[in-house]
Amino acid sequence: MCGIIGYIGSQDAYPILIQGLRRLEYRGYDSAGVALARQDGSLAVYKARGKVDNLETVASARDTSGNAGIAHTRWATHGEPNDTNAHPHTSQSGRIAIVHNGTIENYAVLREALAQHGFTFKSETDTEVLAQLIEYVQNENHCDLVEAVREALLQVEGAYAIVVTEQGRPDRLIAARKSSPLVIGVGDDETFLASDATPIVGFTDQVVYLKDNELAIIERGKPLQIKSLDTDEPSDIDIQPLKMSVAQLEKGGYDAFMLKEIFEQPSTLLDCLRGRITDDCSRVVLSGVVENAERFLQAHRIVIVACGTSWHAALIGKRVIQELCKIPVEVEYASEFRYGNPMIGKNDIVIAISQSGETADTLAAIQLAREKGAWVYGICNVVGASIPRNTDSGTYIHVGPEIGVASTKAFTGQVTVLTLLALCAGQIRGTVSREKVREVAQALMKMPETIKEVLKLDGPIRQLSRMFTYAHNFLYLGRGYNYPTALEGALKLKEISYIHAEGYPAAEMKHGPIALIDREMPTVIIAPNDSLYDKIVSNVEQVKSRGGSVIAIVNPGNDKMERLADCCLEVPEVPECLTPIVSSIPLQLLAYYIAVNKGKDVDRPRNLAKSVTVE
Image (cartoon, rainbow, N blue to C red; front, side, top):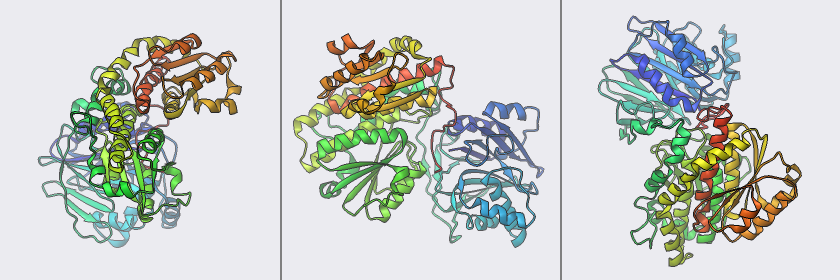
């Protein structure tokens, strides 16, 4: 959560910082602020509650000069969203300014200790405590700011990515990270810092991903320095190419990033599949699986850990892996995994799924799994993120930057990669037939064109959405592979329209949710022509007999459902294990248009941020 951007160079810092904040606003938009280090040695701090537009309004009448600065857009953890709690935070003297992403777990103890030394606090945040602690250490030890930051962080418990600036030193920024991402962009006589790479795109294509427990010293006109927080010894600097374009970060004529990303899915799945299926569709090759074939041959069990939308993809992955690989699979919420005394051993594979690769709970689950001797496989989207750096092997989904907070293309990319993994591992284990591989592989290769057909439902769904804009509740039902699709459809509607929605296995409706069904509660049914089709027809009859209205996702020739449902949305028929990819897209569109009809900001839903980097 939260977005950090920093700059030092020869250009005016303020426009770069504001542009960076706009690109980072998907990480948090409760408040925003900027601190500018001017050449005369002064430090100017401007903050505002709400979106970056509000900060610009505040700063428009102020002096925004300076060639160095730090800025922040906030997703609130400690303290309500307001001007006072907004970052940057300053120390008591105003000499030090800091931006921070993460959670300082022992901030209350530190705050009490600092208060006993005469420090007072303006905000409710843990971040201000860190700013005050740095000043206290500097005053007590009569040391340079670099050493004060290092000593202060050694007293901190929790997660952080920070950038610090100081009055009188407009030529230097200091940064550090632990369990929260921070990227350094290396340009020509200028340097950028950010919580992810999006603000850096267009300025440089050379980046350094700061590692856990590292501290960076960025000084104008001097080489970048990175040190270990623990030992103060220099660290190797690994400069990597940044493969991201400005066009990927713009709406491209769409009204919202979410809508753009829904319509990008034909091309993003093509990128996801590229090079992973042979031309004749006889084999699937995932290097992370092939190079570790022995692991998959000897695996006793697979445990998948994930959160949110990634957890729904994991449920689909469980079914396809068990079907094609004949390995027992369990799916755990990453946030619950480490608190349940998991029984994990050396013959288990733990698969960790995260779009951002920075999800705090998933990273913690990875750490625990490795401590218990499991072999860990990561599936994520962001190249260079923490999860691929902390797993034994893995696969990128390669669907490009996802800016919309409500995940769309990452979900279909994750399901695609899990299916590829199941096919590849099944081939290695000899548990899947050549005919089955070819059938699914051919359907995957055709998936970009299949999705283009599905997207032709955009107009009908837009019209349909008007009928349901003012519903207070929705029920989503699916069976087999599409029970998780129902969960995902309900989540999309909740996230962006704030309508209460529940996803359920269709047969479980009789065990409680059927009591809710009436003429005021629409039910969305996912009913492809699969092995459970007749079962779900029976479930729809139960809904209709109680006066419920039904929207059905169906395949061509679906006469039974056509007679029952109030509205049918027809999607192409695909192999059963791929139906969640095809069926999820109408649900994405339905959620989007209902939210738009309600006047909601779909790219910035209240209380949500894209990447959950705190517990």
